[in-house]
Image (cartoon, rainbow, N blue to C red; front, side, top):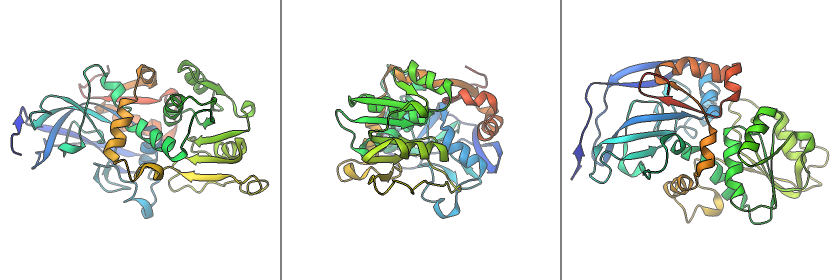
Length: 338
């Protein structure tokens, strides 16, 4: 690359791979070398997106959509063997002068060193903490859904499912100044997490039933039924959950048609239809990164070193007790917990 400078590391890199269902391991490989118009990044931290990555770890990616659902810079192929993931902050070690030794966010996964096109890097301002910046990829999912729904001033909005995606979506919607926004979850601890973020949180039986827009993020049949129930007449339900190979039952009987409800898919692989002709995916991600304020720091709930990732992913995918309180779990690259 013309004008390229380098402080490139040499030696061995580490990559996390899902080899089979519930089987992950670290591979030791040579540090990758960038080609023309590419950069080499040394990872500072990566983040686990628990819903999608647990689904991948369980082997629940249907073969029919494996190519459509691939992460932007994954290695291998879904369902496996694959090195998946899309929340990474690192330091550019080889690349153009304007990126040299700068922190960047990229849609890459759990690898100590990654190579991506230079245009895929999003420079981070000095004041944004590394762990908060990891949430850019999650905020992009929420932003795309908000764009899809075209939420506006004075809307009544609900988010069903107060996990990581739901809470991030709730925080983004709150910036639009809705008349009301409610986070709906059966788990008291998740409702408490929402309240700590300044969001109103209620159990399903206490939520209102006249919402203009409802975002569903719980990946459960019960959550989907609740979302349909509380969507107001002529209202819109935006489905953000990815069920993978599961086929949930959807209650489309009774008054679904009489109430003229609309169910809209929000898949982040393309920019939401209302913005698609005027925004690129890179612009969408840059916008999401700029929306991360101090509140998002509360979503970082734990960390562990890369060496422990195989067991951490097993616990997340199987729903181990300790993982139920996890929102963004950070993977560190210094060999010990931070």
